[in-house]
Every structure is written in C-alpha cells, then in structure tokens.
Image 1 (spheres, rainbow, N blue to C red):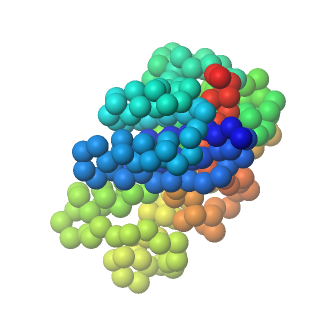
Image 2 (cartoon, one colour):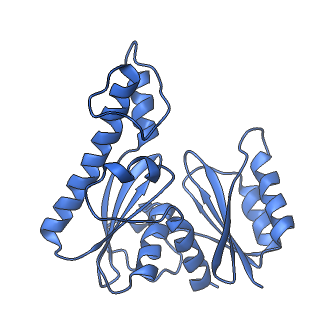
Length: 245
C-alpha cells in the first residue's frame, strides 16, 4: 500500500489528511499550542502511517523544520505557484495565489474535468475561485469568513459579545446571540447565493463546489444547488502530489 500525507496549514487550523492507494482514510487536527507541538504532531503521523509521499499547503509562517522533517522521511512537495498543476493561471501575479486556492481548483478540475467550476472555500476567509472548462483559473474573490465576522463585531463594538457559531437560529433573532447568528450566517448565505447568481449571469453552465470547515453552518440556508465536500482541499492536494511525483 502507498500512503500520502496531505497537510493543510490554514490561518485557523492546522490539519492533515491520510490517503492510502488514492482513497481518503482519515483527517487529523494538529496540536498548535507550545513551541514544537506541530513538529511533534507531524512526527507522530509519520511514525504511525509511514507514508511514501507528503505535500504541504500553507498560508501561514510555519516552522521550516517541519519541511525538513517531511523531506527526510518522505518524498515531500511544498505547494506553491511553481508546482506542476493541471491548470493555468492567467493572472498578473501568480506568486500571490494562495496555495489553498490552488488546491481547491485542482480538486474541481480533477472531479469535473472540461467543465466550468466555481469553488467556494469557507475558512478564515471565504474564497470564490472560478476555473473554466479550458482549465484556466480565472480568479475570483475574497471576503471575511464566519469567525472573522463574529470577532469583528466583538472587537469593534463596546457591548456585543463574542459568540460561538450555531446553525440553529431564527430569522428574527430574539436576543443578542440569535441576532448576531442571524445577521452573520444569513448574511453570508445571501452573499454566497448572490455571487453564484452573478456568475450564472455571465457563464451559462458551471458546477458550484463548497468546501471548508464552516460548510455545515450554511447548507440549510443556501438556495443554490451546490456540491458539498468538506475534504475537497485534501483531494486537490493529493492530486497535485501525484502530478508532481
């Protein structure tokens, strides 16, 4: 059996997915507390799964020793704009494209080849990523994510509390907590529906793919038909790892 570890280091969470013979096996959240905790977590994964390959997508300033460790024990690839990918990026500065966005659009092309795809990533930020049927990553948009919106309401007001996300709330909130839930989550849902509608006005036929840790909070509130896969970024990372093997 051939095992690949796919690491996704985002602004909020550091995660890893295990693939064996091309099949998704499990997801692991990495400890990110004390100094060296991430490196120890990576080392435990290496000792547990003995992977043949590994790939890292990172949008943060992580410890470079992690890359050294992965390169010593696996055939390691760090995803960036120089990676070999089955898409083109006809934008002014390809080096500014986030590794996470590259992984998402590669996953879309892998799952739905020769089709227009709008990939929406729900994380610390919402990213809208459009790749056309010619496998050209056109670009998209970025806006604040759910947690960022909750935190901004708390940080930039005198009395609004920082609340925890919840999918269960009424349209008309009856207290401060449910007012914030309704405003933030329904506001984001309408934003997503509206942007999908704008793409529909320009591109007749395309798939909409939704991914990210916050996806579950929005599913019942979205009106558009969407393909949901919380592990989409991992599938893109695995495809890129194979492409660069």
